[in-house]
Amino acid sequence: MTISPRDKNAPRDIDAPAIIAAKPDVTKPNTKKVFIKTYGCQMNVYDSERMADVLAPIGYAPTEEPDHADLVILNTCHIREKAAEKVYSELGRIRQYKEKNKPDMKVAVAGCVAQAEGAEIMSRAPVVDMVLGPQTYHKLPEMIAKVHRGTGDLLETEFDTLEKFDQLPELRQPKGFSSFLTIQEGCDKFCTFCVVPYTRGAEVSRPVAQVVAEARQLAKHGVREITLIGQNVNAYNGVGEDGNQWTLGQLIRHVALIGGIDRIRFTTSHPRDMDDDLIETLGSEPKLMPYLHLPIQAGSNKILSAMNRDHTYDHYKNLIAKIRAARPDIALSGDFIVGFPGETETDFQQTMKCVEEIGYGSSFSFKYSVRPGTPGAGLPRQVPEDIKQDRLVRLQALLYKQQHDFNLSLVGKTLDVLVEGRGRKNGQLFGRSPYLQGTHFDGPESLIGQIVKVKMTDAGRNSLIGDWVE
Ligand code: SF4
Image (cartoon, rainbow, N blue to C red; front, side, top):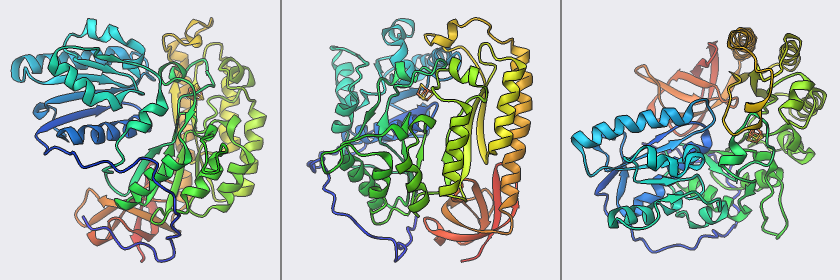
């Protein structure tokens, strides 16, 4: 794959020391295969890539074929209803395959279901050799050794986030030209529908120098777009190079100085942590893309309060007005939950009004479902399933129309597209617009990895079609 030369105007490299000292190359030849199945959000996508990095020095190469794997890792997500049951059924399938075809195959359960279920997994599914929470996957080599020795603790669900990041290998092997980079983990907000504070722990931010070192590594490997991620990313307050705690805005401006990084995004943000510095950075930093995912979940103040969101609809609306004043071309994305316990038709209409007033370029919307262990699970006045379904259909009709209309509004415009790879059709390429829409156009493969100008000629609800201009 060809990586294009950098934009001549872009590099303004900073001299940030890598805080992880270079380690001797002790990488073993790849003699074994690991298959990692990733469930859930971008935090898990990042964690799965880092698990592969942790396993490479002990001889494991990633495979897309579970049947060929010596080690299978399920990197699980607890956000959806019946998440644990789905993991147990997958483990049932793995057990059958292992018994019949590959008795030496090792099986690990990682991620948020591992954190929530802990030892229960090993007693319910003896096929599992090890269980690791989201903060302990750097211990995989140690745990694999224990499995082979047949001794030691095979359950690791501690919450030491910073220790994990200190132990991860410096070398990253990113796939493609766009990469996630975790800068923050955990959440202190305790929304009453959400399991994250229980599975990922309290908010922890990585030090600035560590983030910069990883971003520089990514740039060295050809990555041009970085998405800074965290469960509550705009609560970022990592220690800066001056010893003070830095805001997300400060961090973004610093990462923007790294030569080779041409685009920056961040997700997921909470309205309460959207400070003026970040809003000003949205307006002033050209490498920051004009796209903001800022969930509100519901438009009714009564429901926002029951969800423990700690803000009102007016607070959100004023915030959006400030953000749009700072960055008029911004496209907004949101998360919505319908049918939270106690939601009446009047409350739901306030969510519809919110969507009409704010206007979203993309969105994620769901029916409320009980997550065991969260306060929402025990609330009275759970909304019947048919009402939730009806509300979701009405809400999505509006959100999808807004999304399609937004995409259509870009037809005729020329946008910068980061070309990620080949499209589905012959001669077609695929990339991402500044607003994150998938974009298809015809062009030579030599454009892969470049940021090119594409004039949009058509738009569907989920993607854009255009002509390569230059
Ligand atoms: S802010 Fe987000 S991650 Fe934190 S509890 Fe609420 S929904 Fe969950």
